[in-house]
Amino acid sequence: MVAVQPLTQTYDVALLDLDGVVYIGDHPVAHAPEALRQARSAGMRLAFVTNNASRPPERVAAHLTEIGVEARPDEVVTSAQAAARLLAEQLPSGSKVLVVGGEGLEVALREQDLVPVSGADDGPVAVVQGFSPKVDWPMLAEGTYAVASGLLWVATNTDPVVPTDRGRAPGNGTLVDAIRTATGREPVVAGKPEPPMHRESILRSQARRPLVVGDRLDTDVEGANAAGADSLLVLTGVTDPIDLALAPRRLRPTYVGRDLRALQQPAEALSVRAGETKVGDWHAVVDGGTLRLAQVTAGSAAEETGPGENHAGEGGLDALRAACGGVWAAADAAEEGSGRAVDRASVQAALDAARITRAPARPY
Ligand SMILES: [Mg+2]
Image (tube, rainbow, N blue to C red; front, side):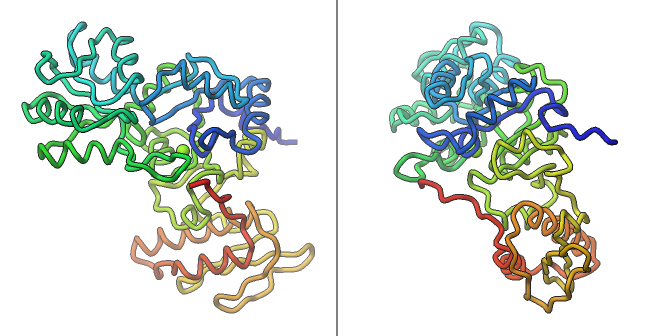
């Protein structure tokens, strides 16, 4: 018999995105606390990896622990740390760095023996910019004076929005745009999906075989792919099933799971690959750019369905994995000049007909 190992045994460290994976605002994502406890007891180590630079690791760990997810400060990796390391590699120890941001950046700079300053006239040799709700016009103006004078400019990340209880609010990317527009310059970016963030996570967690776990294709999964790491997409955050089915190659994860309970499942139950069109009792066929999803009942072949016509059984993960296998292969073939591009409406119709679980509603 082939040993069937859960992901917790296949990978030594889970590099966990936070928002939409572990928590949403002040609440844990369903099943996350218990699934992470089980992953730890199975021997998997955890690293909590966030693009949000506003809070230092101690505060992030305290927040996690408060909502029921036990976490130590040394298990938290922030984009502020990745940015501070980038700066420390290029500047002499003790260099002054202008901070457009908050406490998370100041702590990360000091950890690298750099000195945070708040004014363009305080002698900075570089500028670092990261999200903080305290960033205001005077701070952006100081940053602009310093960046315009030609100093090295590092941004922790360029996520355009940050989730808040009241909706999407301007994130660091939007605030970076202010200085970019004012100066015409471009920052060096440290956070996901750029390589410094993944490197920081590996350095701090000492992972040998990491599994990146995230809810976003364009940060978590793209960053993992750029680094050559395997990734698990969970459907508890911003990604809808159709986004996954239509993902271009650079945004495709190794695995898809509903939530963090997937860590206890084996790779074979979660993998998603172009061309793998038969998954469980689901079968995907893309014909002339149209996706059809059929459920094969025991002892019989898949029934033929006309274009746009789909069996209406409850689908879920296997149906989604089959759909991705079919659509990805067809999209890749079309890109290489054979076959038609896959019609988005047919993918949506097939997923709807199979009643594939959509991402739960977000509070924003
Ligand atoms: Mg996220």
